[in-house]
Image 1 (cartoon, rainbow, N blue to C red):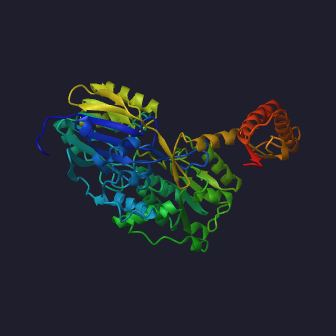
Image 2: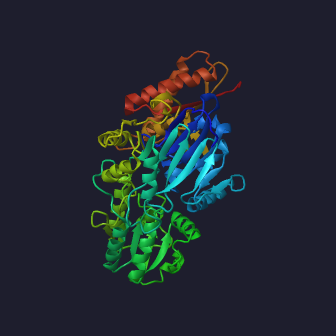
Image 3: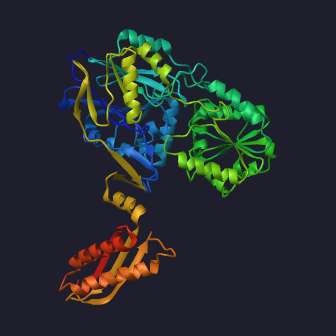
Length: 557
């Protein structure tokens, strides 16, 4: 980098602070009017019952969209959806190069091809431990361990100092796939001087260590060997080490592996592109799995979180076209419950139990370990890096605050638990929050990206609670009724003590009375009068105020 006067070095999270997932981190260097930026990770989270019709949620990148001319690139720490899942959808708004290691780059290209962008986007593959420059930033990948191939921390050097951004990580002495944590590199950074450690907070409430993938392999080999019928293992598709473990457990016990679910096929293809998983027998096609004896087949499935459209849910419901499980068969949940998915997972398990399927979870043995650091691992990272400032990210508010407390307990001089939108000065001078910028969420609504506060989504949420009433009527120039009113409802109850037909007739009567009392009103005024009257009357007889649409046809319109 050129030798220049020291300028402000800032950190700005727009996603991942206050939630687990949807990571979007910005680093900026230079004076405000001419600041250059890099994005570190650009991920998604997923919808739930509070977001009807919304499966994918992304961070609102409006702040950096407005500064896209000063955006030098997107650097991805690893290939989990909460760190790279928004790239293809938001890249057209950003239009900058993407930097990723080979495994992550394969998955990025696959997603870009899905969106018809592959030939437009410059995806630059960088090697593990690679060091490169983007404008005023000197960037170095640091090998860590996590539950996916090629996870990296990122050392970001500027004339104002150096930050270590961990991404997702853990300490695993036996990760099975990839190298162990590069302790030498982390110690070297600590010796050089780490201005700030921006660090994963997911497991900050978990004491001790998270455990090793090697231990999981031994346990899964044993558990699979005890089963006599068909076996299905539910796991996160992105956990390639776990995928490999399932294959080892199958072959050690005389079984063949059948992948079930699109994500499993996608991840296995990405893994094979970088030389992984090639030592096993070919996968059995779903169409052929039924010809194998029950004790000779193992299904590796997506849907461990109870996702209704995933393979495991369809198997549990008995409507998967190729795979069926029943009495004498076993489902092994080699995964954790992501907070918010408890209800769906319980429902999924109950459907399997109803079919006579035995369930094995991490409560029954060491068949899953987390990919995130527990408290002792966090303490170890602070000993290696020795930062002056701790900035917890990747966690709910309670995680960030607890992580900041832990950092102070291990003698870090200052800790800041940020909110999305907090602009933090890293250096020169005293670090701290110096501004707040707009931050929020974008919803993927079908093929359309909308703001989380869009009226359409507010209406949809309201309809999910209070239903919908439509009233149609035709009037003449004097406001007299020519035809109708007619009422159509959606989401209104019909019960022995509450007749839907009577409710609709009552709404029609209310609309008729309202228009009959009105004098010479136009269509717009008639719609407003009827809407208010219908909502009031619905509240009186039902106890809820539904969304109401009134359609008035004016013969002179």
